[in-house]
Length: 227
Image 1: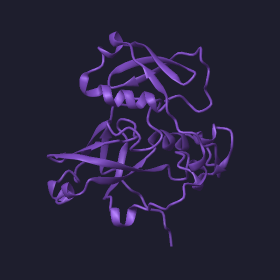
Image 2: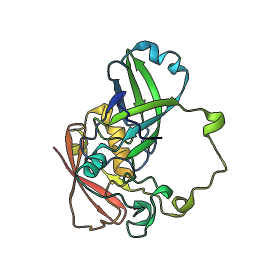
Image 3: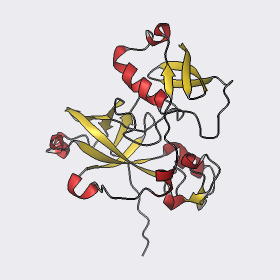
């Protein structure tokens, strides 16, 4: 029996990240981030959302669309990857990680449901690129999904990504008030690739229509410009 199955997006998410750089490494790390899930016909039906407002959190099943495009262009699948949590040097089996480079390029994120706007969902804490296709949405069920005693493998034994942030007032003034807390959270979580620690390097982060430039040295991220 042929077990291959074609799936189509039910929705797309709209976030403040037009590029991969700066997206939090996991959902929920920056709870102030906001996003909108817009359903695609024929799934844009309010009846499909009946009762969803009773749940505080949702699971999103989605596609790493940029990775899927690389696979389509001929990039081979590999059984091991280099997790950022291990500095990008040590290899682990792909199924022991949340790497985007997995056979079906599928992602799983837990987000907070902030509201229902007609046929759209407003969510917080998403770790997705703007325009990412969503393949399914399921409610988070605390009585089965929460496992307080669960072990976190190698992710339990690596340093937290946390930086102090120096944000000059003249730069902060260029950021809309409603986006400041989210941007601050993104910067605190160290958006740099795990293998880059050059204190003389200036980085550029695209966020909410802005370009935020910064440097990092000795655990302090300093914003140098907002354009």
